[in-house]
Amino acid sequence: MGTAHWNIEAHSAEALSAFWQLGAVAAIPAGQSYVTAGEIPYLPEALAQREANQAGWPANDPEAKCYQPGIPRATYLPYPFRIVQGVGDMLFAYEFASANRVVHMDEVVDSPIDSYMGWSNGRWDGDTLVIDVTDFNGLTWFDRAGNHHSDALEVTERYTLIGPNHIRYEATMTDPNTFSEPWTISMPLYRRVEENAQILEYKCVEFAEELLYGHLKRVEEE
Image (cartoon, rainbow, N blue to C red; front, side, top):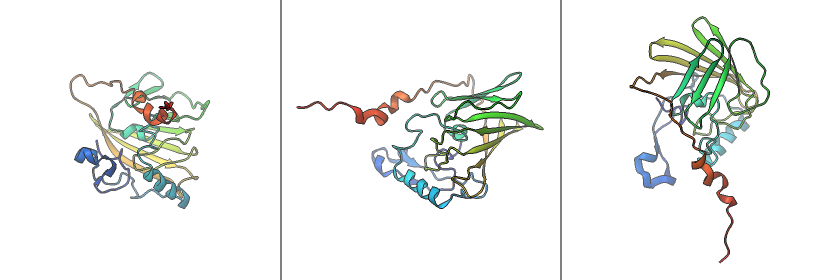
């Protein structure tokens, strides 16, 4: 719940002029900032890249291409996810693009390769689950507003149960190639409490094929 998937910074309601036929259905709702300091501390060149990302939206958005969303974006996309806590490691299963990740809890495990979802090592700080996520490939965004990072991103997540159906979620981003200093987002997560709540399939790649590969179609000569 919320507008973080549109923009993790504060923003006004705005029309999407390219999709005017959908009226209010295709409009950006206003939202308050989830960044605890108010704004993301971009380096100048990285800020210019954010503006370029915005100008090319939605065609260049990794979400539109059905790429795995990365962390923390997977947490606040408008699709449910499930945390499966076993005896040792944990599994996070996300509905969007059938993304998932294992959180290694018993010992710190090194990543074999960079990836969209990064590599997660977790630990307990009292009753708070802390997850250090590293080894990103640099190809994901934070939201639909073009907020981005490099492959040097490191994310420290904190999940704190604040009630039977609520978790306080915090994520601190460190990326010296993109930001002048670390910064943090914070938001509540809400448990789905309706009867028979479950993760359904959203294998979206078939909906992105035209966007990704349409330019490769053979043009038949008349």
